[in-house]
Length: 113
Length: 112
Image (cartoon, rainbow over all chains, first blue to last red; front, side, top):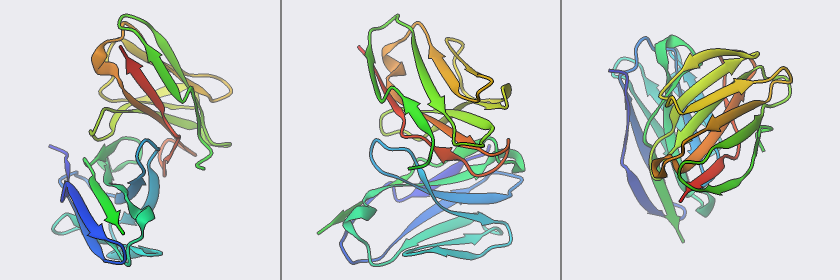
């Protein structure tokens, strides 16, 4: 069954600290994996897209890693800010294409001062 | 701002009623996607249109229907509404049938 699982479900950290979010997927065949940030009540915003051949990709304070062999990805947030408080969603397209996306349940991150 | 617009922002209605949600894709995008996000749940894919034609179908109920018009805007029609239909409904668009999707701000539907 094509699934995307994320952990932890929720996370609380202090401002300035780092954190790492995990994503495991069973979607096959695999073409790419995406991380989205979703503020409460808003639409998801793409942070990064990783293809099969990419191991690491950075977008500012966000760094995503991908291990296609173990079917795992992580999103590392450095020097967290209050504005990082949001849900982070791991997404994998179904059947190797882009049109149907399988969404993880997300990790809800709260950054406290 | 993703460039995708959705109206209305909020909608409150009663069970058994019918509503229409509207989405305008980014300029130049031919494909539109609809998603449902219930409270504290992940996004569920409903349906995709590409250049006016239905391209893919997800977990869309028979009470729901959608269409994409010649000007590429799309409407999602929800009928015989039930309490469980209360959710955020997102529209996304992409340039072609495959490609990065850009999400709109969503329509929050409350069924009382």
